[in-house]
Length: 436
Image: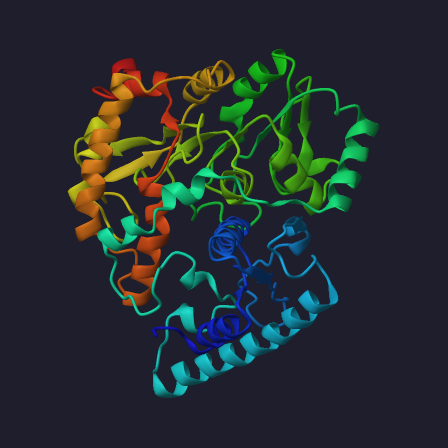
């Protein structure tokens, strides 16, 4: 059994009591959302209960982790053992927090005095996630045939019993009524910047909110409210009728954050925590813009759309078409998940506006166009090559194997589409080259 001590311990305790134990990712709302979703899915499949334990931040330890407020996950499900913030959930959270402190101390000692280095898998304050996707804890290599036998597509078709806790629903609905927002549909927008994690210049996921303003105006003119999600470190939006710059309101809270995501008409987002929460926990319809890694995180949910960041070739000194991008699969870098020759550049205002207009008029019964089918053909051709040649981790066979089983669910079973207008403008020739 290829598990670290705490992974093995919780796995064995789970087997003895016929339960699933999950200690979710402590500093990523997106990863934690994904883990809670798939742990609940596993509980349903195996007819078990799920114990979710949140670790606590202890001063002077793991200070580099930006622990989220666990009240964001004030959820209920018939599969959950613990009520949120119940005595037992808090008790076991403290126990495992102390354990992870000692684990980190031992790891630092071994590294400093004996040069024995273990991957974060052995000391990160999380557990239970490594058996959510990998069908056998003894597996150390991804096998596509074993993956297919897991029948994820069948598992994903039926919605899960996950909802907000009753008191969260009641509290947030009362605030909506008081502010007069309960009578209108609303859309959420999240455009990540560097304020929250202080990574303005080092994270390629950061984007410019100004490129979203025309889309916000368009939605608001259609009589739909827009809630811009985020935190108070963000740049403020200009005043737009029917738009709410939510990071700066006095009723902002972790509970309201997730209430907005669950109840919006759809969400416009990029690769970030709210994106993954909407995608998995609530299966929301979404417009995914500024998509940077073209084989990962495809439009997972039905009636969702995606547009990619624009691929600029440094060697050719021009933008690549989407077809060229998909044909670059043999040049993928294990580090950046894309060719090192390619620089993915942020979507501009017009690209986001075009896809927003398409999203607003999106017919639920839309059938894939011939161009959509052609994209899928090129995509899966690239993916089949990637299965045999790409590694998510060069340091650990275990982590590489686990990531392959995890990421493959999304890579092989996405049900949305690429924005038709974006595909038409960028499939054979990139629109930015034409504009020049």
